[in-house]
Length: 101
Image (cartoon, rainbow, N blue to C red; front, side):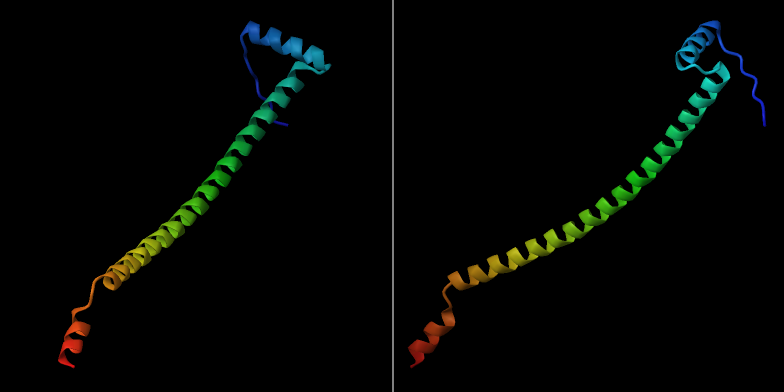
């Protein structure tokens, strides 16, 4: 098994000894636990970030899709507005046809 030699300040050593005593483990085992938890948190953070990136991509796709739908909706509203204006405007041709009769 690989070995790591670690020098820590006296205050950190006292804290480690105190916590190790509370859990009934050796200081080296406590340090191994802290290292493992730190690594797991780091990897979890990377997984979470990857998941967040995926969600961002999905949301960007949805925004793009909604933007297209909104643009189409505005285009149709504009067409309907133009059509309503056409219907409101009196047509000259029927009058001309009626006068000719």
